[in-house]
Length: 259
Length: 253
Image 1 (tube, chains in turn green, red):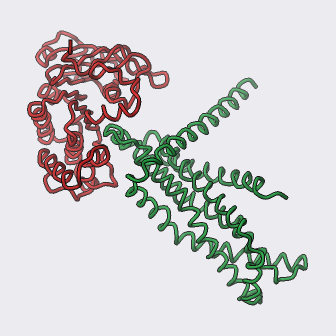
Image 2 (cartoon, rainbow over the protein chains, first blue to last red):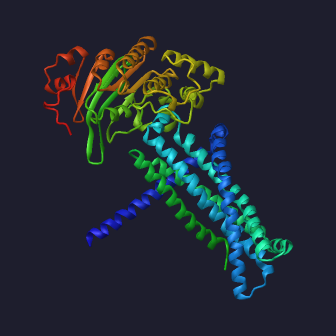
Image 3 (cartoon, chains in turn orange, yellow):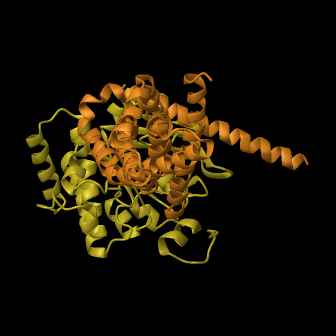
């Protein structure tokens, strides 16, 4: 029994310590934002890796997210007897507020979060980070800040892209399989569109981007040992950022949307 | 009075978990001196070396460089200090996303105000010095272990540091490449008057490059002397190590 408490206590302490060190890394990273002008080259590389290279993945996932949500919504509309002309409104709102930001973030957490953690973790265990330090280069400025900044800015951009593609997917399903006209669907979206939805979706995705960037870097930094340590860090980066994205999503929803 | 001492280590101890790796080390290194630290793998040689540019901090005790306690330095000052200390890592630790030229020029590019062409010139000079002219555009993965180490050396000396730290400079290299590295280390000391500290268990290299040899054993300094004194010491532990005998007073974990 006492051992049980000890174990729970130790786990809790570890959890708090980890959260704390992630937060400290975040503060250091933000401090190095003043070095953005001279780190532009490094940041642009990360824009490319996090932004451009994620596009194909985002296109494929978004088409299907849009398509399946239109299909499911149409099915439920029939069930409750709601008129199908509201399909565009319902699906559009769901995509802009919730589906595109969250699913983009989760998919990118898998690709980018894992990539960042594996790269930084490998650099840690092969002394490349020590080498940077020994050359008087701050690894936080050189490695963490560009990745964090790129993740913070690129994930909202990817989300905007995802909004368009997902709505196109939904439109295609509605027109081809639900017998809804092109105009009816788009009018539904137009009439229900509020700028607030877009802003809140993008606010969320910026928070998700920050989570992916900082967790990926922090977990990479914690890597120890060799291939096994890097593997563990990579896995944990994906797991922790995915869980944190969902928790943050709930918190932001309760703050932004009063029911 | 200005002391000729560049580095002074005062009673430092460092543990990892329950394992005490360094246990009260005192050591001083003079300007221009070449000190070699020998000892078994895992005895804390590399750990000691990493305390000299604060890649690690001691649990107790202090490291002074030019009479300044480096563990208390604010990070701006530490960065300035690190620009005067070059380090060659055991595995060379080249950044694998950068080319050889970018690796060698990295410190110059990020921390100094040189133009691109000045940096390119300096990189070419250093690569020539280590016998790797015209390798700027290769990637570390294209190189052999010995070449990587020489690039690591070129990178360590790129900023003309006053102090050079070598972590196992010849380990894992063939005897000829080892000797090339040894000669380079001697040349650097003679030409550039750098103070150097090398960690190794390669005795051929230690005898060749050292003014003074220190042997670490069980977290303490077991023996200290010139290469000649090390060769002729009556100390059983030293003799077992330098002659490479499996049995003797050293307990192998």
